[in-house]
Image (tube, rainbow, N blue to C red; front, side, top):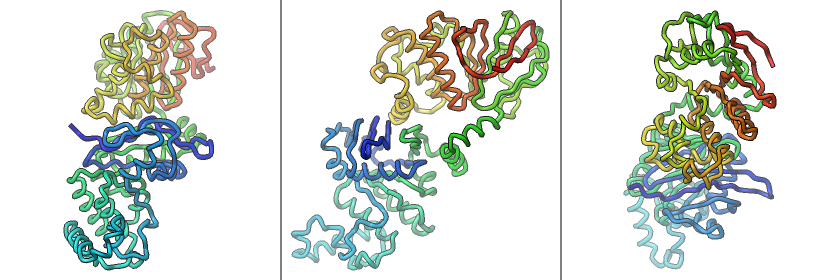
Length: 471
């Protein structure tokens, strides 16, 4: 069983009544390294100050050594458990290396000079570092100062070492030395948080990469799943302005049907860009059923081509469709898409757990999920069964499944067949929310509520023909 050294949950931080961080999640186990990447320097600096005990927590929870820390004790306890290394160094530049390492033993330091000097010699040898312990700090390079601070964190019994913007300018030799020191300390049970650029460590020597965007933890990823290229693309996407994101949404085609014929369908053509909503209102069941069957992979005898993100879409089953990135919400989903014997949080996570290996064994994934769901689902519902919440909440759960899974395309079949106005409003809001997150949505329906105002392209399916009307 892994030992949790440090975690923060649902944490928000304010500076002069301005919320800088909101709903941040971090979890760190003994002997592991987590990289934390921000797309905003103000948020990053506030988080570093919080870890250093300089900023109070406005709301949330902090665990150290798997113990919940009282809100008033957090700054003191953080300083005890976490050693934050920043640039410029916090070492006393007027003192020598051995004096800085054992400054906390100041009353005995000069009386037992030989003892502490020898301790320093032994420590440097233990870590394979060739540095004179009598060297004044002001004569050290920035990298040497960082290494000495790592050793100081070790001798002062700190459990977690935080690199805060200090590891981005290392040469090859310095990088290797740093990795060797980290590897040795991790074998002793210490853990590391890396904030800032250190790409070789990020990808080869971390256990997880956490991304914080707009003050929220939006995901925790296994570093083995990333390359430098994909991470750069991800950060570029998160760094886009709203206008740039809208331009990207307009320009990226994600799904298309070209000249599709079936037994009933006749020359069906349409295309979707990322985040588009297509509303198909049908007048005969036969046309709709054939279209659904083709999308799900259940119908093979049709002509024409279907493309998913410029690749030929050739799903043979609904399971294969899901693997390719096309999800479905069936009519009456309360009966077909929920597990009555599972609590709410398990129902929401079930599709995602099939994609991520060992999802249920790693608590960090669940905390990341809760961070995404916090604005939508009351956390008090997570452990309830589906029989204990309202129908409106159940519909919210169904759509949140796909928010977590993030398919390229989501097909909703008769989503507004319920008669309850409030439920229909929740469905409408969630479809628009999914669209805003970049998921393209196809609505196939025979009923369109007069009060439903979802924007998008409206097409009429009648007698196998698809006719277009823009709204």
